[in-house]
Image (cartoon, rainbow, N blue to C red; front, side, top):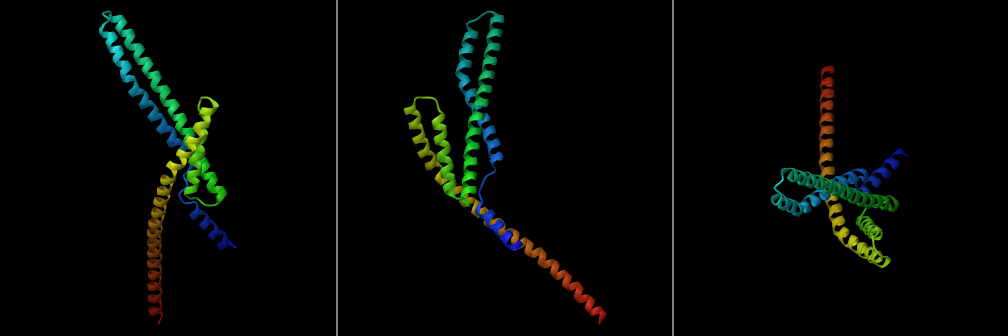
Length: 203
């Protein structure tokens, strides 16, 4: 009974190979979104900083120059902070929805394959296309386009990811098996050696 339960658990773990931890992926997505959104706003602030420098050159009053510099720095800080927060929320929500659907499909189907990745990508992209602002016709277009693009992008990426996971598991399983077998074999040989010595002394 216990051996059959262990076999089922091993088979289930092998089927679920390649699934990604939802929480870890969401945290990574949030931080990536924070970095991307902040860097995008910082790059967009370069042209506005040039305008401020032109105003500083045409303003002889030191107090006015100080006020312009302070306002420019405050606005830039607000823009970068807002961009980071919005980017983190958007990418974090997308990552959470994608990997949540992927793990849900793997749990319901009992196997994790490329179709789970394609389904999760298509559904997530379609959902985000639906919640985007615009008319009903525009949202319908975004849903159809997002569904198609999500499936088209996720199929090769999911296939490549699963192939890499399979290769990594094969290499890890082979290495671990050899190490365990070598360690157990060495221990058995030492034990047999001690027993043989004890038999020789007793005779």
